[in-house]
Length: 201
View 1 (tube, rainbow, N blue to C red):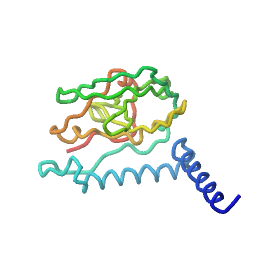
View 2: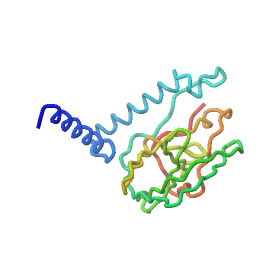
View 3: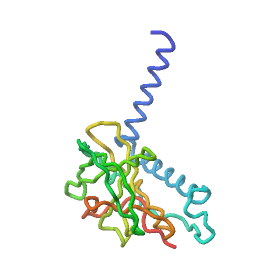
View 4: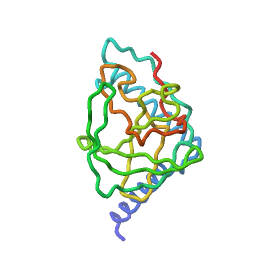
């Protein structure tokens, strides 16, 4: 094996290790908390300084985001259920409009003492997967119209959902934004005390 092949092999191994650690939760509890904290710091910087932030308007003052403490209980590995004939799903927005997404599949997972099932949608325009969900904390501890979670999936039969990374839609900060509401099947009857909490103005 020549030197270039050895380098390629090493790189592939390193990438595989990174994938396993980041996707399947093999980080130590301390490493995992550090990872979540860094993600939240990056989110804070975006909200403060990015021209795409919902707080760029002079009428909306950013006062900092509020999160639940990181909890590995809410990073779940579930079963991915493929939709054989995906169709366009229309979601109603908080201001009465409609947005269309392509059905991608379902994530089935155990949490809160029961099996739960959430519909994953694809934003075809941006080529990203996400799910919008509500739970028993909605309108009490978290935003009433639900929260979002970005999803990654490479075709495996399993899928990882990390609710510690769930976040509020922009309409949680200002009424000038239009945000799709969770589909009916994504309204969980368990509390998800992870991720972003209700924004306090």
